[in-house]
Length: 252
Image 1 (cartoon, rainbow, N blue to C red):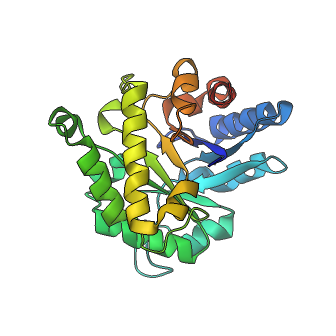
Image 2: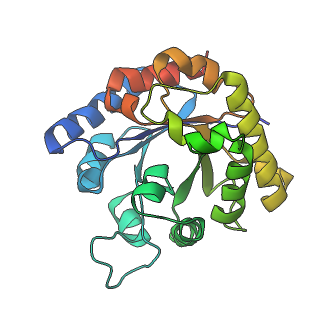
């Protein structure tokens, strides 16, 4: 089944106002200059959401956030609610990134709770899963990923409100990547787990992104695999040329 590619940039905790707006403007201009048969998403830090939204105005690039709380409002100092994200113009939100799971101890149940709240507010969730280096060495990659699908994805998730991002933790920011064969094997197993949880029809339509040291020179190989429907890009999304080059290579 044909699924439109999604090229998503996760800026993480990078960029201040001046260079963040310059980057967003550069990406928007480059995307406008070419015809790409894919969807684009940029997820800057919370502090830049409003400014980046203005830079993306008139483009086909969607705005997303990097995390969200599960409550609409309340005494949650330092947190951001789903309604606050939609209010500022977000369409997507990343949930359960490995850096959130590791640095903040986020569990599968918390990720699921956030996803439910985000869906209720009308946000599309990018739910992240992936194994550690130790789990990979123990041949537990597929087991870990299928378990995280089972426990992190809401039972009523759809292809319209949910995207899955497979990010092997050991590959994030390291320059290391699994082989194309390994990536396809894991993505196929993820789609099988989605079919078991949500039904084959939903699983066949749901986009599964790959993340983990995606660069222009490996994008073509990775993003043309049958079950890879785009990329969640970290470091390479901080350079406009690299970000759009990945999108171009994905379509070759």
